[in-house]
Every structure is written in structure tokens, then in C-alpha cells.
Length: 416
Image (cartoon, rainbow, N blue to C red):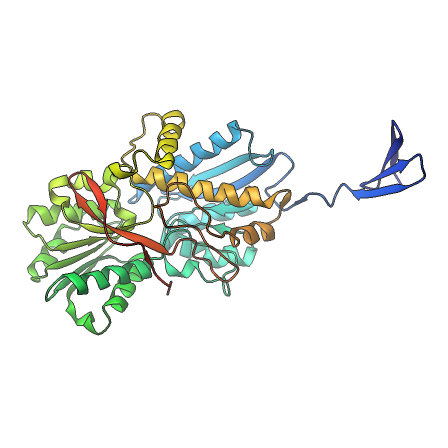
């Protein structure tokens, strides 16, 4: 056995076989294991935590690239402040171009070559669907994915995958309930991105309509790679609809808003939350064209003056000014990136020195009424081993002037 003795004061410390033996002069002995105090899986050491990420820095959803850039800056700020429990965060982020095959290739690289502890906030429903089974077969945490598809909250079948934002199915149902309560004799037109993300919103919307699903008079789809959705908007207007549900990622959502304005079509317009950024959608679409659009919110919008003097907004602006100078602070993607990174930070902090994949998932599934920065007051993070939906409440907001104006009560909905 390899032994060494360190003498000092009234006792001697013997290190043998990975254990510490404290030999006191009174003859008593205390034993502690140096190896049991810390537990690591791939991606974690005494000095480092390695996290994997992919995002659409190029391609049809590239406006979301701001999220990855914000998260990268967040971890730099964490490391600058001393890391997490003394460990530096190594954030490996790659460009998937919003392409499922590319996502598969890159995530295999992150897991098998980079050997990350977990992946974090990978973006997109079709892209995350492509790696869903693989990550669970490998038993690698796939945390706080940047998509609200309802499938990310299924711990029985997929215990290694957890969502973040309110699920699309529930959000769609909330819009449907609002339509039925506020639009007389609704004739509904739906623009839908033709993938799992679009379908999840649409199915929730139809479920919310219930027996009134026949109020949908026109439903058209588009591919994320389509250059424009102009022809689809013309079809929707020509249907005679007085309600428009816009299920699209930012580029197409902005095009739809602008084209509706060009055509003089002014239905009651509902826009999915994932495209509610003032900086990347409403402003490019034209503020005149955006008036009265309704969306669902759970994070503070940086253009909404009511949040300006809150501690959260002040701290976020100070952080942005230091770590992302020159970034467009009207872009809500930077709020999203900052907020979700703080949740990952808290999850890893709670892991302490047990940085195993099992423990990362255990801590992710153990947030009770956590007040994550930038959440709208009244909304908190709540998870459990049987509840993988961290955020299950929203507040409706209407676009007025150059910003969103929240209205009504917090709407907490059971995820479906």
C-alpha cells in the first residue's frame, strides 16, 4: 500500500489507498475517504464543467443565434466571478443551421468526442426530435431545451430530457379560449410551419376550440426553408377569416405580419410566443403592421416600460452593457438566453461536488418556486421527478405602439 504521513501538532495524517487517517496522540483514529467526497462523470473535474450546445447561428432560424451568443457570454461572466463551486464552465457551442441531420452529427461529437457532462438549451423542435432517443439511450442530460413542444415533459419514457418554456400545446389552447371569448362569429385562418413545432401549436389550438374546431376556415403550411410566406398570407386573407393564428419562427412570422399589412388584412392576430421579439420580429415587420397583435408572455419584455425600474431589469441591462456591449437590447432573445442560463447555473450549483449525470437530472427535477431572474412576477420555476415542465403559466399581452402591453391575469394551465 502506498502510504505517506504528514505530522503536525497533536496529530498525524496518514494518506493511504485514497483515504485520510487522522492519528491523534490519544490513540483515537478518524477515517475519511478522499475519493467519496467528489463524484464525477464525463465532462466534470475538480476544475471544470463541460457543457454542450448547438444553435442556429446560420440558416433560416439564425435570428435565434442571439440566444447562444448570450449564453456563451453568461458563462464567461460566471467564470470571471470564480465559476460554479470553484469550477470553470467550458461551454462548447456549435452551429447546427436548424438542420436535424447536422444536429445529430454535432451532438454525437459533443457526447462521444468532447465528452460533455450534458447538453443545454439546444434549439428547435425538429432538431431536438432528431437527438431525443439518442440522448436518452446514452443517458446524457438534455436540459432546458429551447422549444416548447409538449414531448419534452415525459419523464417516464424520456427521463434524460427536460423542457424549459411553457409548452406549445397549452399556449395554443390559451389562444383558442381567448378567441372564443372575445371574437364574435370567429372565422379562423392558420399559418403553420410544417414540422413538429407547428403541429404541436396547432393541435393545442384545435383542442382549445373543442367543438368549435370547425371555425377554422383555412389552414396553410410552409417549409422553414421557403423564401417567403407571401402566397400563404394571400390565401388566408382570401378565405374571409377575421382571426389569424400565426405559427411561425421569426423570419416567416415577420414576413406574415408585413404581408397582412400590405394587403390591408386586419384580423384578430395571435402570434406564438417564440416570435414575439420586438427587435427581431415586430420592428422588421413594421410597427404600424403590428398593432393589436396578441401573444403569451412569461419573461419580462425589454421594451416594456413597466419593468424598467425592477431589480431584474436593472441587473440584466447592467450585465448586457458589460458582457454584450452593442447588442440590441430590444431583442427578447437576449432575455431568454440570460434567464435560461441562470436556471442551468442554479441547477449545477445545487449539484455541489457530485457532478454526475444522475445528479444533474435529480437537481433539475427539484426546483420549487424558484424565482428565476426576468420571469414575470407571479410565475416561478417548479419541477419534480414527475413534472418536467419548469414553466406552466403565462400572461397575455397586446402589441401597442412599439412594445407589448400585458393584460389580464396570470394564466396557469395544466400541460397536456
